[in-house]
Amino acid sequence: MLRLFAALSVPDDIALALSARQRDLAGARWRPREALHITLRFFGEIPENQADDLDAELGQITGRPLQIALEGAGAFGEGRDIHAVWAGVAENPELRQLARRCEAAARRAGLAPDRRNYRPHVTLAYLSRPEPPAVAAWIQRHNLLKSPPFSVTSFGLYSSHRGEDGPAYQLERDYRLS
Image (cartoon, rainbow, N blue to C red; front, side, top):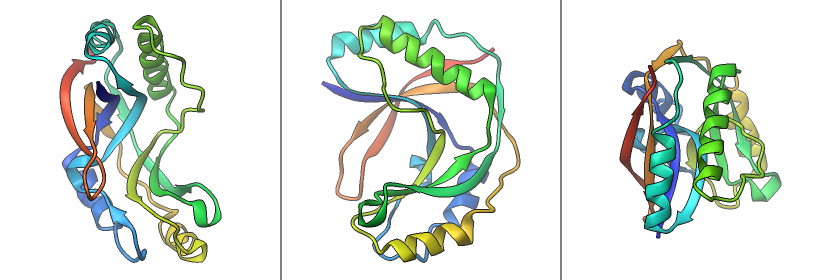
């Protein structure tokens, strides 16, 4: 079984700027710069033969390169159940279209539909039972985050491996947008 997702990598200069915001939140498990990404579709644990089918379907996706910008900050969960803080992605119809194409590829490969609403973001830290006022204060300090636009010329299929400090990711395949 492989734990897989499709994502866009974050350029080094944008990741460096985000890492400067990764502080002042007690108990946060900050993600390393190399792990920062924008998920297009999380596929979950799938057998290797189905992963091959998924790879073939993702390889059929076409689209032009994108311009993306990060904007805002937020959290997933509520109260003591907040489990992550993130940097948002400015609304982008082309990005949403690419995510829909990844969803369609997953279905053609036999995966169940993703029932969650797509909310593009970059996870900055995982949290475990944080103090809600501290999280709210962190979001307020960073909610005006805005990156310069950056070009995306490919997306990747990544594997995820659980570790002590959170998951580690490995690029398995890269798909060009042209």
